[in-house]
Amino acid sequence: MKYFPLLELPEEIQALVVERVARNSFQDLYGLKASSKSMKALAKRRGVYHFYDVLSVPWELNMPSSLLKSCYAEGNPSTLYIKGVQFFFSFGLKEEWISLMKRAADAGYERVVYTHAMTEQSFVVMGSILLVFQENQFIG
Image 1 (tube, rainbow, N blue to C red):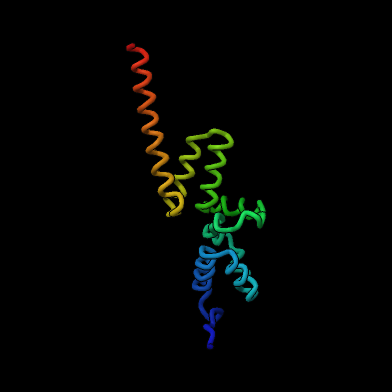
Image 2 (cartoon, helix red, strand yellow):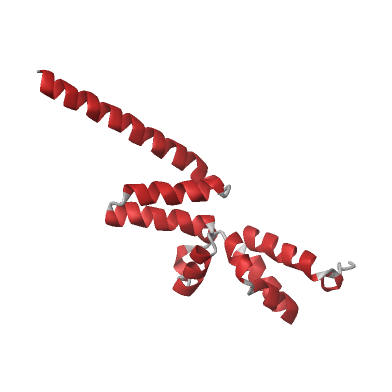
């Protein structure tokens, strides 16, 4: 089988390949990094952190916190979602949670698009129910 000479492509195209691999699989990305020094250098560029899907990594692997911080700093949608969940369930910060979920949804992170829409809708419905309850409390 003849192999495609990836290293002969322009660096911009190689960077796009690395970003796509990062989006698809951590295992493939680490395999790509091990394939050559230039691929390793491209995989260490900060922009690649935006494309990791940290929720696809088994939690038993104990992902380094520095990797999560780098992903969050790049606006990585999966880490925005994780941070939002932490803000809501650990600290009770509803507005921050909604804001981070919206940023992740706007970035096209499929896992959060539905969750964000349903969460916003449930808060609207709950707010309406509380308003009706408060009005009835003053009337009756």
